[in-house]
Image (tube, rainbow, N blue to C red; front, side, top):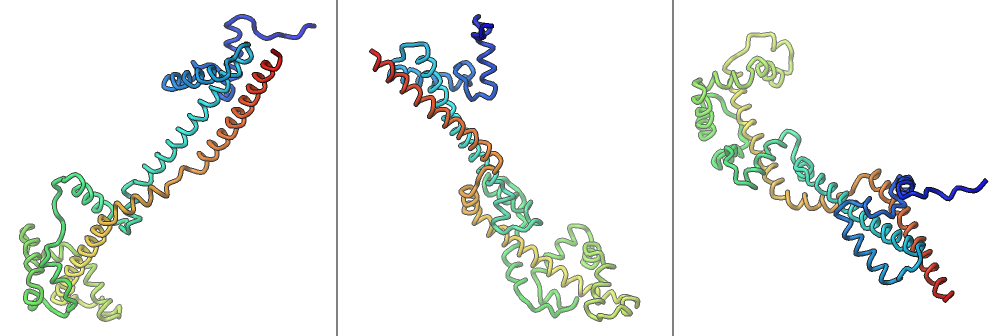
Length: 287
């Protein structure tokens, strides 16, 4: 029985060629390349043809194979560059940069909005505390009551009054509604008496009101601390963003797959080029 010589018709050869190119590792058909790479491949092929001047069908096939494998090596380099670009873009995500800059989870949204305002000059409302309020809350003397609050904290008192008037409430009603007075009445007695029996007694609304005033001051200090955290992060944003970008790496699985493929293509390219040189040298010796 004679051995098969393979497909004879052009259609049969085309099918066989496609079978051999199942994983794109042995492709010698330029039409299988993306359109953007076909011109690039043609330039490489012409350069190789000029260098080696293939004469036989085998030499022509080998030159095309070397050109194709070289084109695949260039494609792999572009894929690697793309993977790094994707990793860099992911690393430059605002949440990751703010986290690296020290912004807590609860301040992420405020930091992002402030960044947008700064970067694109968006007219968002300014939630920063006025400087005169900031100076006043630096005072650590919290020993006051309802009667002396206006004297000890005049600017904070005016701010509290503005908040209350904006809701058409008295200061007392504003604080009681804002801070869930039942919760803070109990908290007040736990902190000041450390005895559960006192929580069962009728609450002294006067003492509770004093405590809520102090809670208001504590809230202002928290707001200022959050603003400082965000402002410091914004100052370091570009530095942290660049650091994360410089450290960005593609995923291990993607890189492992790429390196395996790259090793395969480089081996095939090296062997194909070696075989081509041997073939050309042999022909020259036979002349």
